[in-house]
Length: 216
Image (cartoon, rainbow, N blue to C red; front, side, top):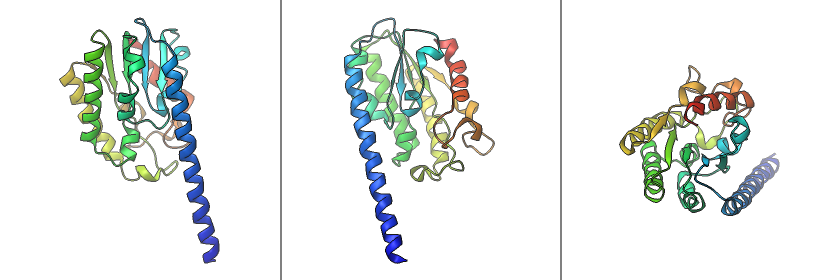
């Protein structure tokens, strides 16, 4: 019995390592692709993590100038480090959504806000005509599936959103509070919007689209 348990633990460790390796490979592929794709002054950039990565934004918004720059697993510092190809093009608008991966790395809401403010200052400095739209973090739902690094971290998202809203006010950028559109009465992502507790199903993207459409 002990041997079976040990083998199971080893197998799970191997699978976790493989999943992380695959994510890292995907990340590098996306970064190198974005390095090659041009950004222009009429473009609208969707900057984010897997939630942003998972949508066909130009189709959702029926706008050929909308460009997806989301990458699965990314953190806010990752956005900062891959901004050069975006800022070089001086885009018209940037919509930013991020922070939940930072939460999974045991980062506090205040630290998430500080990292986001650093990113916003960079954009304002390098591309002063770009309009910036800061979107709140979305909730997650560990009842649908347990994300162990997000266990009992719901309040960090709430606190982080409060801090992010203050960043938006301080920096004079537009704040878009998506959180209330997706949360249930228990501060979780509505179960009907997800099949894994974190990522969004098609109908949820329509809600997100409708929330930001007035700003496009």
